[in-house]
Length: 264
Image 1 (cartoon, rainbow, N blue to C red):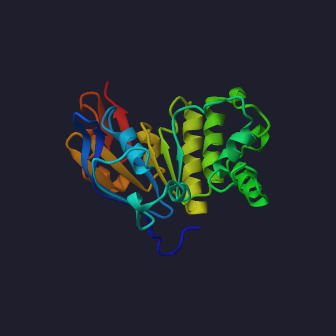
Image 2 (tube, one colour):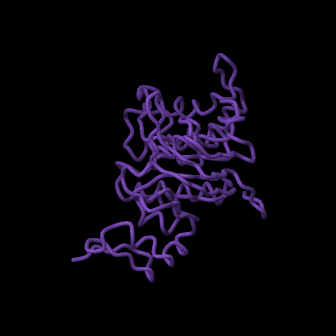
Image 3 (tube, one colour):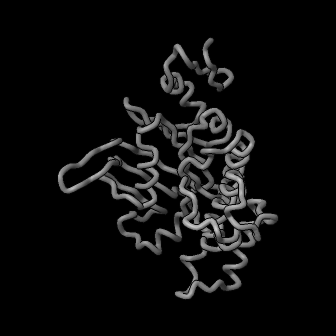
């Protein structure tokens, strides 16, 4: 459970993200500043190509920032070893597992890699962590199936279970609801909300499911060409941020109902 005074799990200061090569430096988004506290569910939204996935890769340490500071649990990311970072952040990406021929249990157990010995042998503590992850994500009935036998929605739950088995305070996901039907989109986002409220996890995820996310998340980071906005959905709505996401002749945002409406 989250403590009465939740501490900051992720702090981003003046982050400039993009790509660096020998010939050039290409910035995708600049001046990104926000923080994520214990027990918070935070969505990253914005149009395609604005830098959501690049931000995810940067905050998870997969890609170096051009400039700026990332602090994880009050320690600069640049000072964290790969093992230390793996004990703080678990990651769920949009890519399918390299091999879908493994069982669900085996895939979830891979979340214990930062803690197992060099042979990868699971201790009782590892097995207990895997069992807890399976129970929380309601994947008990799936654990003996091969991953190729799963639906997209089932596989997404299993990937979240693998992240849970890693037993980190922070979980970061890139488009966790892509390719899912409406029921599984809602199921996955409600599961993430429950992990924050009941397990005290800090969860940051990118999404195009703005309508569903609005009613579930604590805060939103909005990436736009004109700048970065970060606040609660209610405050962002009052600031008129959601009215600027789409052309007004196509989609309107109703601040009273907190819903998007397609214009006739």
